[in-house]
Length: 122
Length: 107
Image (cartoon, rainbow over all chains, first blue to last red; front, side):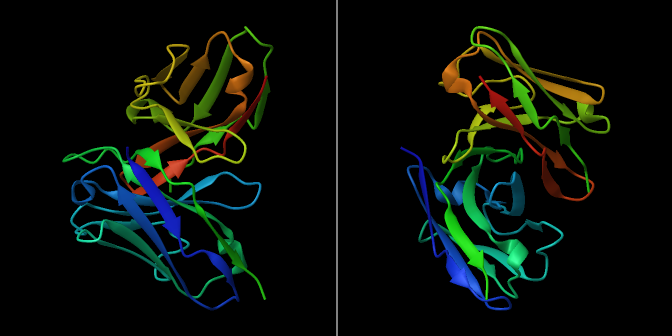
């Protein structure tokens, strides 16, 4: 079955960096775009970034642009999120999610991982 | 960026109908997608493209979208439907995904 498993979360001080990973299985990873979505404690869902199947297109939430970088390794069926200059407001559960469409991108998510928690605190 | 607004909470008795709204400027011209998130769980897609249901989602879940409002309707509400519900669109102007703030459905 389709499965997404995030890892790499933890506690980090403000200004430091962290890299999240998302291991995909059960589908042809190289065919689908992928998203990162986060959820701060007690808050709603907030989309963070999208990457097309081939890495050609990348889109970011305005508040993370220039600090976060989405990337993927299709040979390893893995999605990444490199987070730099972290701020307390980046504290959240980070979900990776599979883009629904191929080859057309519809920009909604049909499969989600269980998330990994990032806490930015001194 | 595109702003999507949802009523924060809704309470419905079992067996009744829940109507969850999602408002945005000319949202009727966009495709709206809906997610259910039960406490402690990851979101689950329940409707896509305004009204289509993924496999496994009961027919009790339906949707509509026109003008400035999209709606998710849950008929014959059950205790297991208690969750947060989020609408979502793609804003092609800003190249960003936008989520509504979520509606907490209490049964």
